[in-house]
Length: 303
Image (cartoon, rainbow, N blue to C red):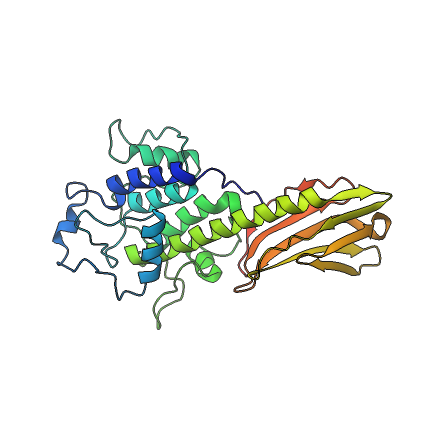
């Protein structure tokens, strides 16, 4: 699995601040509908179901409040706000042209970053568009394609994201995959929180994969190495398939030495969460060369 999460750091936070001020928070001239919202307290999300996700997003800097200090969690999110968050989480700095937006447009810089990263693939550009579930889900899959691959066939973007667990299903009594339902800012915060945590998990998986690769050695017809110890939150396993179709497996912190003539050509390093069985990386290696294989990925529908 490719990991492209290098160098977020300070530059990521600066991108987030700039985008947040101009898009998520906006100004009343950009989002006049905000002025019509009923007055709420400064903690308008204090008892909201999305409270934890909102707090995470505000803390990490990939979602933002309005200038009046309110978040408006039940207000329907617009395309530019959601795109801005995806750009911030991805830490995108490079740009590509977006001719649909004129020079000087308030959202042009953000959309140019999103264009470069493929987030806008098959998306009709309309910064003020109120998003439905299907429209938000498609943006998520576009943004996450380099890390989790494409969705499996037979599902809408909404259905796939709900099945994965990153989008809430429709309320009880309705079809589960209501693609036409609106996405609120609170809904968006929860989805974006899953993406942020997945990004952190994938970064950790890449770190352990690189540690594992440094331990590998081939000598006298045997491959040896050390499974990363990791931490209590993950099960890290190195596995081989024997010529007799058996299995050899080694877990966190264990050393191994395996006769190359007794196993097939592929060794697998898998890193899985002990909380929800989601993976932080599944890496395939050629046993004769120790080269990591880059395989095409499909967004799994089961964790």
